[in-house]
Image 1 (cartoon, rainbow, N blue to C red):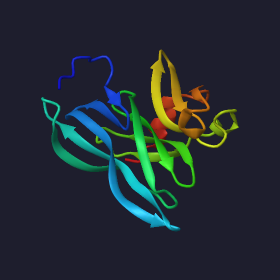
Image 2: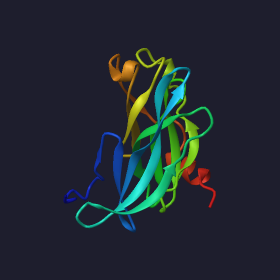
Image 3: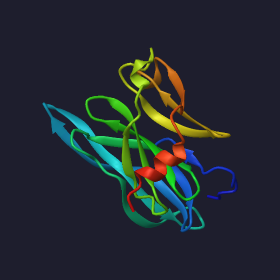
Image 4: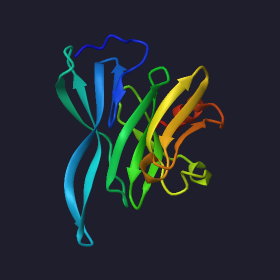
Length: 176
């Protein structure tokens, strides 16, 4: 496996590859267990990280990047933007339904949550669930592309950040 495109980190499905000072880091969905809840089974997983070697193989498992919180059973589909050594992440959270949350990290890629992305459930086609995010930088704009209700069968959505400076939000959210 070779990483020949330096303009943008590579990402696919439920993982993301991020260029860091240590090399290529893989953020991936790690299966933890099958849990029995009310007579049925549900998967439990969270986002972990690993350092890749020059051949793209996992060289060092580095542990949890984003862990579960109360009321959640699954975290998946991380997406990351490098804002100059500070990283903005979005990921899918599953509790009673799918939601998209934001988090920030320093160079170690250990994320601290900012919270759920607000305003997405007011859009037809995404009123019940929002999942499978992808962050895209379009010049100075940051665009969140995501799937709407029924895992995207009802809508593929895009939202443009309309708050203050996203960089200020990210930097102020880090407690070093």
